[in-house]
Length: 316
Image (cartoon, rainbow, N blue to C red; front, top):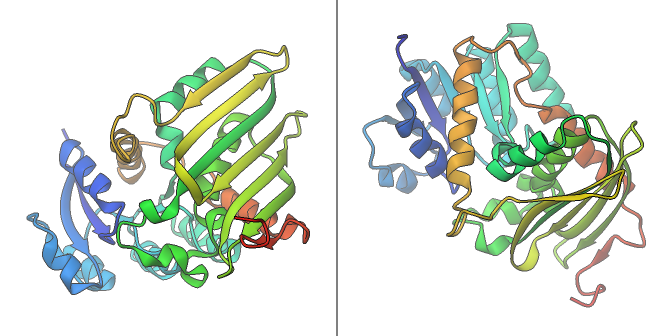
């Protein structure tokens, strides 16, 4: 057997425990180094991996075979760029970058250097989603509805940047949108945005949105996003052309807060090992990280002024 790949994890925020646990469980990985700019956060890490406050030092001194980039959205471009420039495969949390222009820069660099670049769309690895996708093989889809509803304050994990549009890229459309839109692309292939309604709060953060999409096959889709929902709903409903309705609940069978993420991130790291180890042919890896960014920007452009109101105006 070949040796395990040495992994660096850059960013020890709310999502990092899922990567760290998966790297520990999977035989294809050896956690070599972690990095965070926050001294206190770095000191709280209790594992044996080397610790760094600067990702460039991690790249130069630890010399990982691959890195996970789980930093705030606005930092995706510089961190991923430095890793790719150093010849290191990258798996980056969604979204790929803050804007489609930034995403193009990263994709172009990865292609030029022939380095794997993967966006971690963890919901496409969900067991219920995979079952649904298998059930739909060879069948004609009429409509797809994806719901991604949660109270964002329950999911921050101490990360205040989610509520800063400059660092997040927006609100629910910018951050949860890529996951939900990727699920539409998983089931329908390439799609275009036909409309979008956004409700923002008094701080300008989009808290609710409905994105409408169309496929060249004639199928339509809707993505419902909510950062003010009292609880959590993450599901997909598909209606076939014959009228049959299929459903996937991404949270079912995973009791406990965010419990579904454990198996999703293990599947991400399994696929990333194939990419980073050269065993998979895809060099886009991201399953459309750039395409999801372009759909997010199209949704913002399509938001009708009449629907682009504050939460107070919407009566919330």
